Length: 137
Image (cartoon, rainbow, N blue to C red):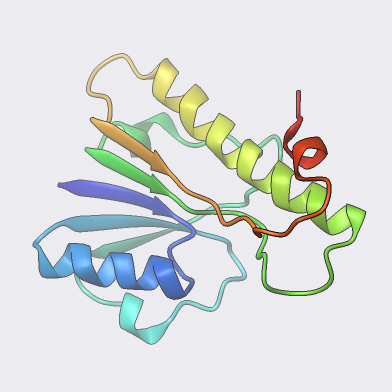
């Protein structure tokens, strides 16, 4: 399978990339332009695709038409800094924005579409005001 991965340069994403490569899959890794790519992710079987995860970014249709599956783990890091109101907003918005971009791009595809989209994000268990944070238009 040809798998598109967002958020694949972190600890969990890097491990997923390595496991998929071991199983013979190829990977298109969406990465921020300024990301420091781990050395173990710069190898055959992984194609790096620079992408700015801005609110209004658009994924290229020609890229999406080449993938069989998508693993979406992109988003504002949750283990850095204090959880201020601004930080919580960035965490939520970052996950909603990339997921929306992926779904909108898939909807525009005329031919082959990915068979699966897996989207994951981290949440803190003891987050105060959890219900309010999760309410988003």
